[in-house]
Image (cartoon, rainbow, N blue to C red):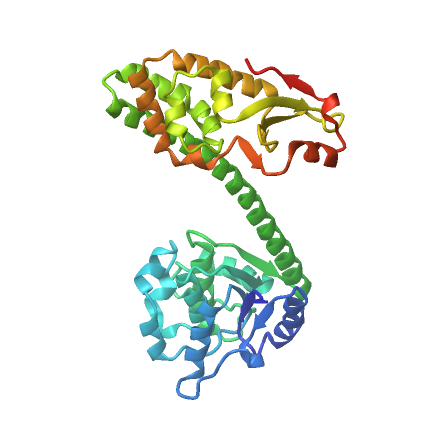
Length: 383
């Protein structure tokens, strides 16, 4: 089973202890940590190790960045050709760090590749570095500030600007711009557990909403089918208004009758049969409403002459409504009825979604299985 891959990006020498503790923590969550100092990355002997690190980032699902006092090694110049710096500048309102591309560290380039590939980055900055970053922000526009101010958290003075400006780049991104301070390893662990749990919860919530939206789409699709039926019916007859009204009004009737196994379906629908004669043509000799289990809605069965039956998805009142609709439908002139029927035959949903389910089992046998006798059921007279 594929596991989520978490790339850990940071300088190694000053943050070795943090990295060594993060590795088992990530593994304990069931994820695969990807760390350069543990040979999780393929170091192709034909290329530089920096290039191998950059190529591995797109193969991961998320990146954990840890910024400490050390800048780290500068990326090799050939790597810069692998980045779209124009797009990267557009992703943050503070992108001054990108004006000095040749000064970017390998760690910074790993994060820029993640940003370029839209991979989530969880950024953590040592609280001492964050404190000095605030000092830097308040004084950086003053003359010779970098020459006069010492930043205790930064290991090498000349790298301070590149570390602080990279933090600016991260915090001013248009998305995924959260940067979290930490003073101990537990701060990182607790934050990751909380963030990943909430992300999973959000995905489940969105999935539920997507299901609701899908149902709304189906409802909207049904309305589109109604409109399509109207258009098709309108083309088929000069009596446009009557046909359009009937196409919508009798769509459910068409769907109900389409569920019967009749080869002469169209001929029956355009006939002048009464409801009872229509059911006889469909070989229906009895309609039964049976209370299968107390406390539940009675089931409705339409029994055929050969003893097999249809079970209805809806209560008896639905069948009675279909009878009333049929009487009204047969009152329309034949040309309009033919147009409505022909339009319904082209509506795939009417043929696909069945109000009735046919069973080749004998009705009496089915009743015995349900431990219900026909004597306890109510017969509905076919008139």
